[in-house]
Length: 106
Image (cartoon, rainbow, N blue to C red; front, side, top):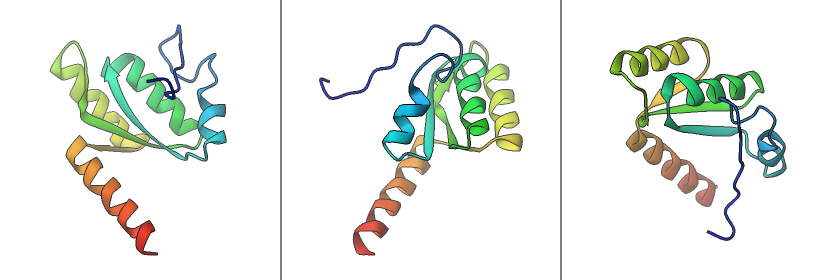
């Protein structure tokens, strides 16, 4: 899409050596949702770094994949214990819709 922001990166972390944090801050975003491959490598690195940069981070459990189910599950478990929230995409979308509805009413 022409208006879509694209950020290229060459490391296992979406923040490292990119303008991602600056773009998110400029847009007034304080929350990021993590999706992609691999849960335990690129996604996990970006998610943890986002938390260290004071973003609220949501790891979407059914929108990530790893090479084994054990790697996937252990990464999500570790993240939920120490860094942020883990939820499935349906829960995420339900919460997002509720949040938008509240803002329209308030």
